[in-house]
Length: 118
Length: 145
Image (cartoon, rainbow over all chains, first blue to last red; front, side, top):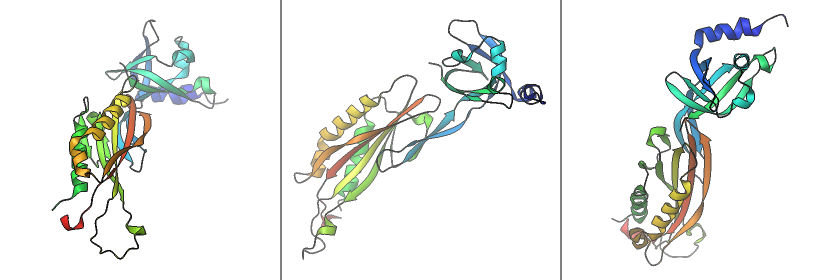
């Protein structure tokens, strides 16, 4: 692979768009990482019966670099239910999805799908 | 002037608005922001009569017993679990037992619980919804409209 997508793409983007965050797994100490806030408007439909209705809200989410997390000891087994705090709010990772890179999924991003911390 | 159908729909909203923990009660609103939840919405729904099959020579103004099928949709955000079962129980109990609704449908009418459907999703918390359906048969007297 001639191009290093981490150095040429992800790292500069995170340097510009990223915000400081902490990721906490269970009782372990919080780890400082950088995330891109991907919280967006979201609409959920209600489709039962003959009537369709919608509720508008937000779908909180955040991108992080898989290789940054791995370098700080956070494995995929730690992603689900991790506590992630950024931009003044604290969330729980209810699910996650990998966004690969041409260098492979270990050098791409993970998109955390978040819910409000109870 | 008497519009029993409208009276029934207006009463349904009053009945379900009194359910504990409901923040917002609406009628025919299909676009609700999350900060109004838990919300309950009464949709007017469909109505049918036996008019299409009636080949009698009776005058057009004869009495009908239409079947109206309002839908009651309850929506909530919940961090853990759901209160849908509680809401369903309250909706069914209150609609079937409401003395005003029973009086509106009259002795030739009826109120029946048809069933319900659920929907789930995610916003900032878990989104739970349930559509509860009824059929109400009531006397439609054309001369009273």
